[in-house]
Length: 236
Image 1 (cartoon, rainbow, N blue to C red):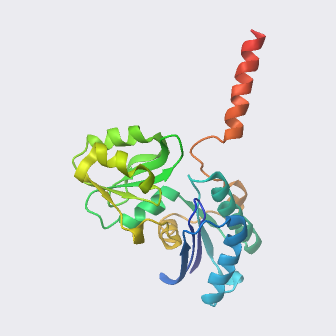
Image 2: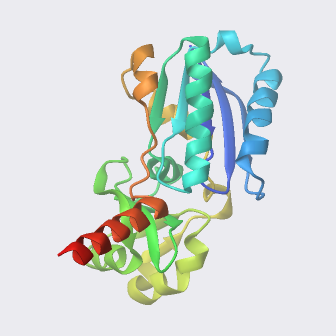
């Protein structure tokens, strides 16, 4: 079975091709390039290097969020377009689970971090068996650290954005906080595929209903709700 994996959920871009449980090609970059420009050429190049034609792909795995609204949307759109065109299933995988998968050999808890501005993060807490200890969500960093402070295990923090919050993390957790090395801080599309393979394959018809999992409403939705609330008060 041939899988194509795509992760554009944040600044890093990762594409992978797996055939019969063997990784043929994986390309990952943390260089800030607009995914709308770089993602599809990266897919085409990965398939070319793997000597795989688009029609040979059996399923697509894509990071479904949370993360950058634009980044997540681009990856999901590419995956859905290819899946529908090729009549193959698309499987969504949590972007945070993908990061956590880099630390699955760590003896302790794993906390993936994506910056969400204003001291907020997209985060979760996983065991090293990648079981959820705190579900994916949009949290104040303080909330995450307060929960981890009650635990006894060491915690591996994974993600390029850990550097933004590292001083605050160390201040609360001290030596129990361990930062993943640079070679494990980027999402890998091969991990997206690995996790997708654990799920049942959806029907091709479900592709139409597959949507990103942002874990928070967009700024436009926030402003709309605020306007509606103001209008309601004005009419009271």
